[in-house]
Structure formats: structure tokens, C-alpha cells
Length: 357
Image 1 (cartoon, rainbow, N blue to C red):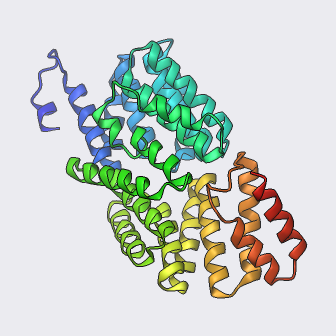
Image 2: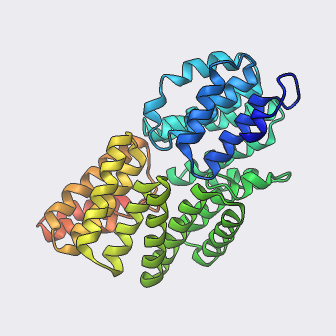
């Protein structure tokens, strides 16, 4: 920003380009409000389509999981992008996120991401192409789509981009998700540990929050509950300090507390995570938060409450087109809770249907 103030109007890069770089750096550093303010200021005078689209991208990214709050931005940014494939790729990448987070439609999100990757390739924007492929592969992994492994390989092909390589929505993260859901836990731990180290080295606060959470998830699945609890608590502290990913970190901390800590705290954290998701209109994380709540309720002895929460998770995932049980792994908890409340037939039906996948 200081450089922008001292940059003459006709120079290259110009003052607004420097301001946009500052806004993008602010996003990486976890300063979403500052980033949004800078981008909005640039939009008051920018007339070049590339600068306007770049500023809109900052506004959208600054919204975090609350993408419903910036719905009105998309018609404006599409108009600014015109027919430029490079600019349209950026917009369709964010539209993919909107389909996933706001509408909970995994199939449409996957289609938007694939379209964004094609546009980016046409526009020779390798960074956006890689981000879109990573998004597509992660969505396919969560859906249980048969193309997931092939798309992960496409996202990992050279040439790579150093920024994308260690981004929490990048190709390395897509590979980690696939390893985790494939139960390749040692490889998953190695992958996420490397990503966390690089994010810390680069000062990528948002990525650090998410990588800490995913490392905690890996340790939890491995059975290292004490280590998972420490990591989950660290992720939650950082999320609250930065205002980034609070709901997601609360959700994972709830699972860790229920497994190796304080079950009352687990219940409170799961409800907090669900409240965050409800406020943000985030269907994907609402299902995760309710699954954590159902697990905590089961551990606490409230089988009826667990059944209510986990039945809602089932409805949400069916609506989103999620069929792979490896995504949330709540099915066993629901089956156990159903047996406890005297519904063994429904429990058996759930087990049979889950095994079929």
C-alpha cells in the first residue's frame, strides 16, 4: 500500500495494480476485512476489465464461507469479464464454490470447476487451471465419483505453480483428501505435514488453519486421540484469532473432544459449528457439523438426539448427491444409535445400503 501511494499514475505497474497485490496478500495473511476494503476502493475507479475482475475476486474470497452474502457480485463480475476466457475462468471457479457452499450441489460444482479449467487452459492461465482441477478432483473425491483419481493426477501434472502447490484448495490438498478417504493414512499424514510446513514458511494463515485441522483429522482416524486433540485445539485457537475457518475448526475440535477430551465441550463445539454453517448458508459444513454433533450425542449417551442429528445429515448428503460413506463416516454412529432407540430394522437397512457403496 505504501508503494501504491508513491507510484505515479502512468507507470507500470500502476498504483491500483499495487493495491490489488496488497489486497491479495492481505487475503493470504488472513486480513479479509482489509483486503475487501482495498478491493472496493479500486472498484470505484478501475475501468480495465482485468483489474475489475481481479478486484471482484478479492471481494468474493474475503467473504470466506459466507458466499451467499456476495451473490449480487456475480452478474457484475461476469459482465466485466466479457468473453475473455482467462477472466471467465476466474469467475467460473468462484461459481463452482458457490454451487458447493451455498447450494450444496456437488454435481453442478464439479461441472463449473471443469468448465473453469477448460477456460483457463484456453486463456493460458496455468494457476487458475490447476486450482480448478484441484477443486474438481476434491469434489469428485467427496462425491465418490469414479473419475476422482484421474482428475487428481491431472491436477498434479507439470508444470506446477508454487502458490497452488501449498494452497489449502490446491493440488496437494486434493491429493491429501484422496489419500485420506482411501484410508492411506501414513501417506496422508506425510502429505499434510509437508503442506503445513510450507504454509507456515510462507505466512499463509488461512492455509495453516485448514492444514492444522486436517492433520488433526488424520491423527484422529489413525487413533492418536491425544495428538489429534492438541492439534484441533491449536487450529481452533488460530481460527478464532484470525477469524478464518472458525466453524470448520470447531467441528473438528468437537470430534477430537468427543474421542479423547471433554464430551460436554464436544457438544458445545458441534452446536457452534452448526450455527456458523447455518448463518453462512453453508450446506456442506452444516452436514459435517451435524455429524460431529450426532457423534458427541452418542458418546454422551443421548441416542435419541444422535438419531435426530444424523438423520438430518443423511437428508443433507442425499440432497447434495454425496454417496460415498468415506466422506463423513457417520453411518456407523447412526446405526448404533438406531439400535439403542429400538430401531434395529432401520439400522440393518442403513448398514446394507452403506456396504453396497
